[in-house]
Length: 339
Image (tube, rainbow, N blue to C red; front, side):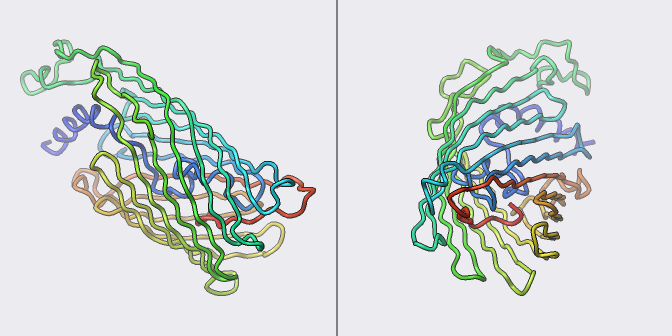
């Protein structure tokens, strides 16, 4: 009972704290435009459609749901030759618990990747993202300390809070840089840095002009290693920092490629660890350029006693398509695991 009471209080007071931090995915590489605007156009084809859904904390409360969908495409390839220009769009939604706090965000992005050599094996890219975010709070359905009466919360008692703006919205801007390199036929490297909320927007349900959404800094680094014929290892690392909160997620996936032709079959399995939070198991399958990915979090945080180790799960689908290029083949940029 004490554990569940603490969780309830955390949920009540956490709404204002949650406003200061962004969403995240365990399979960060399956939501490329949310990871780094410079990943726009970074795929093994002409265009990419990606969708991801996350569900967590179902075992201790109403589940928290986060979802995203994106589309990006290479343009002007006949004129750019070895360089790459990509544009894209992304939608992100988040429902906290039973929907008392919701977020919807729409973004458009563009990125340019400059080839650093004639063989188009080394690239440096810059990306920018612009959009609008809307958040709403059903504060009448929340329980506050002033409503605690005779051992329980009584929502008929006034909460005493002055929530003047239950619906807020703001424009947002992100930017990123990306370096990719095919060292040889065996090793590929990708390193990126992105900064979100370049102009920190005011985000408060109260008339508090001082409350702003802090910048989010993300560093990601990964390899694609051909260990042997048809077998690849893709270790990756991500570090995120925002408003004194940080996330470190590292691990690797193992890919086995079968039917190496126009319609290869690729199976993957991976293991990751989000520091002080969760161990993550991943599975993936690709066929006819459609990639299906699944991840499950095993809780390793202080919430473990309440969750019995159960965290959240994610499902992602990614489709990479090709359009005919009269100017020749498209440059192949270094992909993250199963990206």
